[in-house]
Image 1 (cartoon, rainbow, N blue to C red):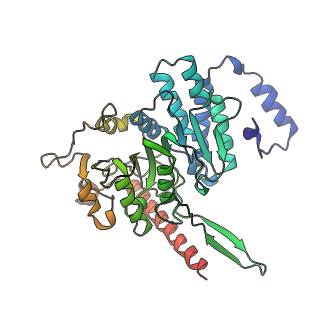
Image 2 (cartoon, rainbow, N blue to C red):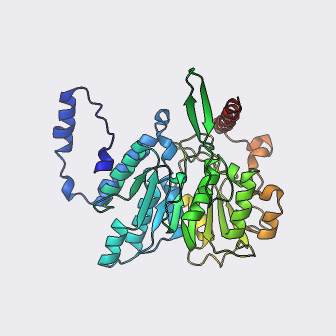
Length: 404
């Protein structure tokens, strides 16, 4: 309860309206007879509606639930496993994992208590978002005497805990910075570069730091999944170092390329990367990276054509969660439209900067004018590209200001 009401503010200025909300609306409902599923689903609906309010920036921490469901389906969490999200937002990945285990296994009393009270771990930087997550947990019947959410910067240090599974979608911002005001009133920004002994590379790129942080959080031979923007796949410098180390020291086995139009933050080009942590070895653990291209010739919008769980059925089938070591490509020279194919380690490591930004499908939008998308689709893509470019220009400008 302390987390739910921590730093909360009552914005009602009219006592009559507050009374009407509490007495006439809330007290009229018999909340005790409603199941956790009903209350939790209702709250999830409110979170999604709130995420649509882009003016408040609420969508920055909301991952589309159909995407979360597909990811959890292929990760297939099991009873007695510990599950972590170091950037948990409103708790979507953790709650979906909880529901998957509860619905797919006949749990013993001890297993049910472990699932509700000890299995899930989350970190969230923003107090208001952590409050939403805490309420989400409570309404889904998750948590014992204390909710398993830590309000802190998860990148600041190694927490010491190790987990069986990590699922996360960290904030899309590329770099962190702190605003500094000098005695003379001059304002400058200082990049927050994370320096940790357990990291392969020192960088101010939050996404690359989260990749390294997740590697630390995992137990040996355990699995992780992370949503990452395109720059993590091709960026040089620290990005190349992290990719080469990740491919060598972990089994990076699956990459899902996502289309634009899925997230409330505009202009986002993202991917989902799956890997298992492995012990030290002279030979690389990654043998093959399987890529599913769900981006080329796919078009989704938040309102007119939103993503559905069924849209990811083919990916889940191709992933083959029952035995991912027995996979079959859908792409071949005879079937060049197949979205699922594998790339060997040697091919990956010898690419320029070990880039994982790989695509092979023919983009129909680049063909003759008769096949061009509708004008509103073209306009939206232009806006997304411009916003993405503007964000990169802002980062460059901040870097130049920091250098004086």
